[in-house]
Length: 310
Image (tube, rainbow, N blue to C red; front, side, top):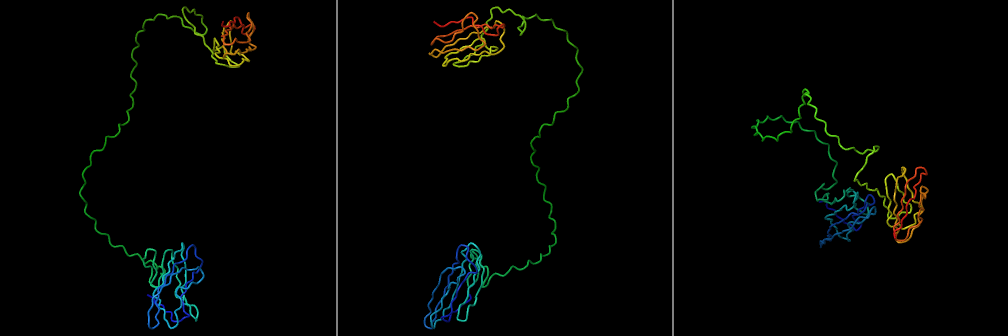
């Protein structure tokens, strides 16, 4: 350990950082003893650094007293390396005892420098620079080849492999003889086509029905429907409209029932009176049935029948 002695009332030990701290000051602890020739009294000092402003680590002794410094330690509590100087202050001026750079978590003492796990980094002064790497030693001679070991046992058979691809198909064989022609079957009944004439006997033709619950402008394609039913008309019919390409004498029946309130009916321009006036309203809660036949001369649907439910 390096021993320091303050033997005059003008002598102190101080510490100052080379630059401003980053976050935290360094922790400083000193231990000493005063000897006045009769008594030997121990004491200590603990404080923190103050950036570039010097702080007194060990104060001057009293008159006729020698202050023997037993140890000084400085711990870097900052988040970056710090450099500090520890000096002897006397009437003769300032004398630097040591100038040290500490890594984060390192501690400098008058006995040496330690890392953050307590391992000695150097004794006394700072750690010197790393010396150059020495030359690589020569490679020794190759040793003899070892004997060949025994052959290992044969492992179990592996799993069966996938089935290989199918071979090519051979050429076609010769065509066999043509068999005899069978007898001609009976002629079936005449079928129905879009253009031929066929008489139906005991056959029912089911009407194609366009159904509406309520519609103010019902639109019916007469190519697809033979009848129209409106089951609960809740508003006036402002335009009854038939579309499609009707044929001469094509028939269609319209049934209308309101929702309990009589509803007005306006027929489109493709309707006409053909013996019966076109009805202009329903009768409340009564079924109205109107029959039409198409006339290709006038290109209109002629009203031929009107019936109100009694």
